[in-house]
Amino acid sequence: MLRSISRTPAFTGLASVQKQAVRTLMTSLPTTDRARSSALGAIRGSGASKDMMDISNLEEFRFDDSATAGYDNLEALREVRKYLRITKYELPKLKAFVKPFQPPTKTQILRFRTSTYIGESNHPAARKVVLTVDTQSLPLTNPELHKFLLLVGPRYDPVKEQIKMSCEKFQDRSQNFKWLSDTLDKLIDEAKKDPEAVSDVPLDLRYAAKSMKPKVRFPKEWNRPVKTV
Image (cartoon, helix red, strand yellow):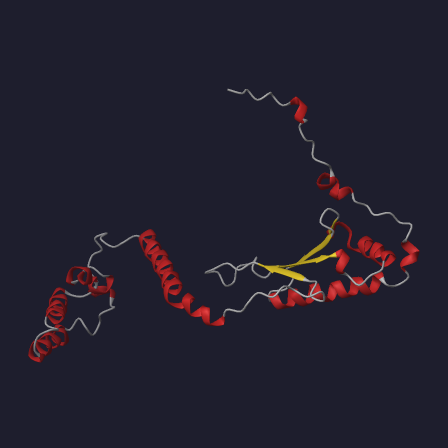
């Protein structure tokens, strides 16, 4: 313990007399108060304690300190140990807040997805919100749904029959939630205005041609015959 203390940068700037007094003080902690008083008196009497941070009192650097990469490794280890302690002592406390799973009702048709990056509270991608909704669950008739799909454009997935929109315009995640919800409401309101006017306009699904293309399967008749032993 004393060796590790004597190598720290805080002790390299002390004079030799002061360093010896500090070592005496550290070794005399378990003993009487007289030893502590004598060690403190030696520190005060050395004169170097008044200008401890003065550059004239610093010793010559001998390149015996750890490099920046070494301190970075120590900081990474501290962070890992921090989350290990949280995992062991804090996560078990969450059992008191466990609730049984309840599937969404018919009125809860919106699904929001976000990403959280542990250890990075200000990650630029953490504010992004993705909204997904099934087209069949929207309160629209067939002509209104057709106009709605024309409005959303390539955000419509014809294979899954879903609408997918994302937003990361605002710094706060809750604002992106609000923007997506308001935009969906505006699209639904616009789709209900004279939907018959665009009923003859076909949907342009060329962007989804690759996903809609049927997969070519190898004919079973072309398989090699299985040898029986």
